[in-house]
Image 1 (cartoon, rainbow over the protein chains, first blue to last red):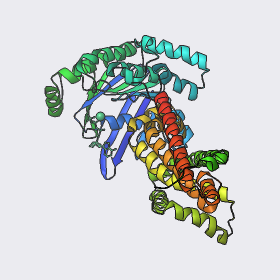
Image 2 (cartoon, each protein chain N blue to C red; image 1 turned 135 degrees about the vertical axis):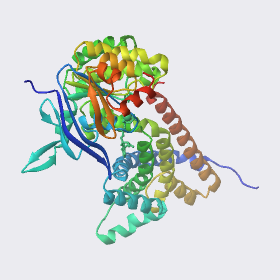
Image 3 (tube, each protein chain N blue to C red; image 1 turned 180 degrees about the vertical axis):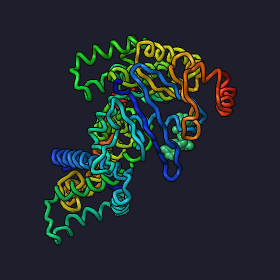
Length: 255
Length: 220
Ligand SMILES: Nc1ncnc2c1ncn2[C@@H]1O[C@H](COP(=O)(O)OP(=O)(O)OP(=O)(O)O)[C@@H](O)[C@H]1O
Ligand SMILES: [Mg+2]
């Protein structure tokens, strides 16, 4: 049995007094594509953000490639890793955000190169060539010298995805990457994600695009009040939902 | 008005007025550079998770923003030696102006930092940068561009404040103007020339700042 790319065990997360993740278990093998669906506030984003420690978690274990993210056990107590260690772990995964979050003061290609140069210590000319290759992959090579402010939302999102995958992560995290886009720009971004999925990239994605989740995932996870309500292959979840909640959710999401 | 204008006496000493103007500029540049460092640190302190750190920064800003700069100048030069801190008049003035501008720039930088989308820092972290490098490479450069107009205004206002250094005999423009005035009694000419020199210098600085803003502007 190979080490899972992602293994989440009994994950608990609180914001102040409010528990928003109430014991999540999730395992992903290399090449898996898992979609998180569920109503607003069910904890999808928070779950994703615990994987790269943008949120701390109180209890349970998030492990990427067998390595616990953010903490280690020391004399029976859990202690937070040092800043540098956490930075290294974060670079094991890549993330694309709802609002792209490109670096506005850098051109598209420099957005992609930054992590390569600063984190991966890739020489500049190599980083440039690699960044150019990734921008080509997402159809943005001709825009490489444009700044984020000069690009459409769909174009920015494609650059942001290139920035993340250029780091060669073992796992990509996508948080509703199309929900801030005008409807006519959604398909160009989904096409890029699909292309990466078919290429064998391991991905965990949050989406409100049910058809897309249906087409791209091996496993769909329905989140409900900070717990996993139901999970399984897309055919089963979308066509034979076990719970009333999921059935109602799917009806409301016009699937 | 029966006043015979005679600029000869002022022209004769024009070079020392110019040297005074130059010193004022140097004092302003050094002070705002140190003030920027103080302001940056305190701006991050203001946004710290630790209450005691936020509190310390707030106290600093309130104290120095609510004391007239003239009082600060006199305090640093005349009162600090009583505590065993002896500074030359130029050093003493630089310390005062740096500390004072630091308080104002803290507010400038703090509001610049809170205006940034939180996702910017997070994007830096997700490509594997530490918090510190995210600040250096992303947050501060983006914030800096946003606050450049405010920074420029502060610089001009600090440059004008260098005229107050005359009270502790720092040989800048106002100090020399007063000296020439006393020696020649050409009251109107002296102060007219000094005023014009400030106006022209400030206009040139403003023009340079505008060009810098345009050059550094994030393309849209
Ligand atoms: N920084 C925060 N501080 C306090 N509460 C938060 C914070 N972030 C999220 N929450 C709360 O945690 C719960 C889960 O939020 P989360 O963003 O994970 O939901 P989601 O499933 O991604 O929803 P959506 O579909 O709207 O994006 C919500 O009740 C939300 O209000
Ligand atoms: Mg969300």
